[in-house]
Image (cartoon, rainbow, N blue to C red; front, top):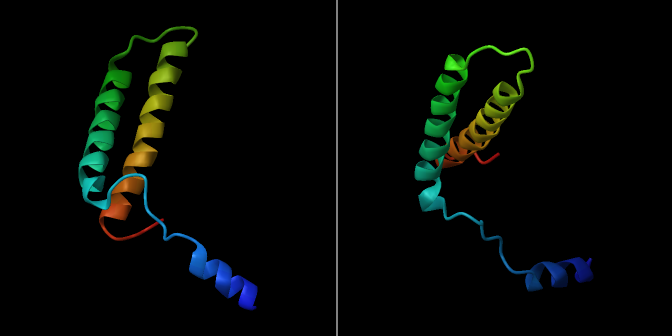
Length: 79
């Protein structure tokens, strides 16, 4: 038990990669890009092989996922 306590005392505290004060701007940027890509996705002409559609939709989904997590962390819900 003392080994664990000694290890706990020597480990540096957690520090996030992105400053907490920047999270609202980060969330807004990511979610704005998501909505812009969703609009662009809805205006693409339909093709037999939807490679570009899949790329745009995947990018929008990825940005939206990170944007929602950043927005939750901004609101104090740390996920």
